[in-house]
Image 1 (cartoon, rainbow, N blue to C red):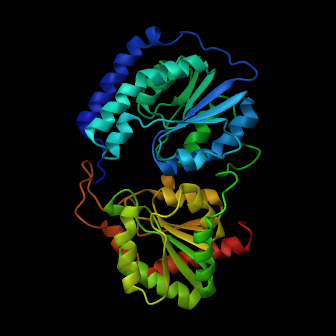
Image 2: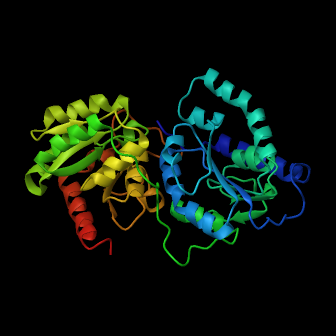
Image 3: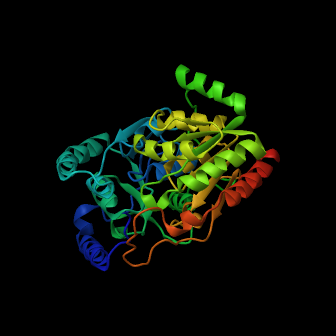
Length: 392
């Protein structure tokens, strides 16, 4: 269950921000430092897998605009493998922040271990002597612990949750802007421009699929080109139910000549089983069997990926294949799939909960339940038309 920030949490964040504003002269240098010609750069994006996938849009612009002698990226361990072969990155630093562990429902002992590791990590960051640090989320905690206490002379982020007095370069957070545009604005505060070409998600060179997985896919492709299905996000309110999903499997086979493959974590195997039971057309179940980059390779191979608002949706978009994003409670204007070969299917967003507490009932949110196979087929046809025109 996802909850909107409570008034108490918001008040606490504002109080912390005011305290940090007063303490800023003790924590960071008063003057804006000038970065050297070949700076050491750290990019921080410790939150969701999908956000890390979207952050790849600014890696090459940072390389080209700042000409760093090294470019390191800090992400959560759940995302680290997504960037391990990226050509723009010199090193991936894996750290599970205690606050994101809490958001993911981690046990208290695991969160305490993360807090215990934090001082050593800060010392490591200081020892590396980064010249520029960029927090792409605009997270007050990350600005404080990594950028300010990490001793970075140049510190860029947004005023999303506060901490701007700790920064040397601040981008205004616009809640109407897409998350990729938000990242572009942050690097723009450093003078990095993307005006010469539209920013594109890019995961770099993708691996070959394991031989056994490749054999199973090749065998499944005798039924048609591949349709990849990712049907559940971080909570049940982002799940597309098995009934319309099974109807899509059958219609995709009968009307579009597509052979469906369902993906996701090990916990999504029951959902995959329910879809397979209801569908008449063959369905290949690969839940719990792919790494993040292998998932990207599969999505690049597929004719189209249909995914709920989730990490796999953004991975598929970054892989470059056609993508249909299914939206219920999320806002596709802010976190929809990014790229010319993408579209969405939705009944309207946000929905499925009532602010400010946003407490959901059990089962999929009402907007996800209302999405029909017919609506998704029409979205698939739209994106197929764009793909046939070369993304024009």
